[in-house]
Amino acid sequence: VVMQPSTHENSRNSPARARQDRICTGRASALGSQAATCDQKKAAACRGVVMFGDEASFWLDGTLHQTWSRIGVQPRVDTFGERKTAHVYGAITLETRPRFLYRFADVFNGRTFLEFLKELVARSRRKMFLIIDNGPCHRLQPEGAEWLTRHRDRIELHRLPPYSPELNGIEGVWKTTKKRTTHNRFYPTVADRDAALVDTFETFKAYPEMVAGHVARFL
Image 1 (cartoon, rainbow, N blue to C red):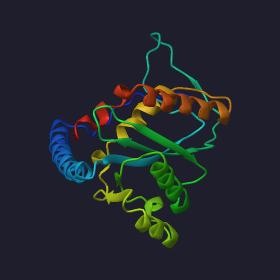
Image 2: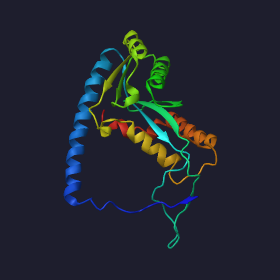
Image 3: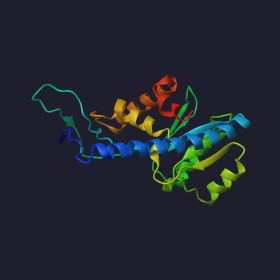
Image 4: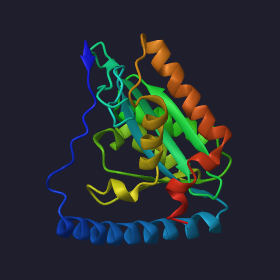
């Protein structure tokens, strides 16, 4: 099966709509910065760290995106027509040189989210103030809620307003991941895809300046 990247523009992108989007985005960014600043003050008081957390899915089939090609030659990307999704939890610290952490999961639910929280606690000596959205998998079961209460000196969860991904600094990290790893790419096996993701994530860890811009606006 072969899929062709689309280059069509959204016909609804009028100048008036664009201005309104800029106004709304500006207001949302201001709210997000205020919330992050509040958490930073709490973190500074206990020598902790603010983090943005989220999860992302990556299909075996590559993500189609605009690209260069010879005039008259349509870019083509091979595909199996199968998802075979990789589920990844991630978190990035709100610092000038951010630290990126990740964990693969079989599914997204309260159980795997709790496992991710436990790994964050195990890998950090500082208290974490984790900013997350209201996704279904972030609803901990009684066992998870009890664990969170017992470890409130190590980690706190702070939830964003509904439908506000622009307030989560890690969203840009996922976009950069797709640009580097899945845009117009073909991987013959799940192992190849996952290895490419790991390589990208480890690169973020080794060179934090690659993702620093995504959280800089909240500092």
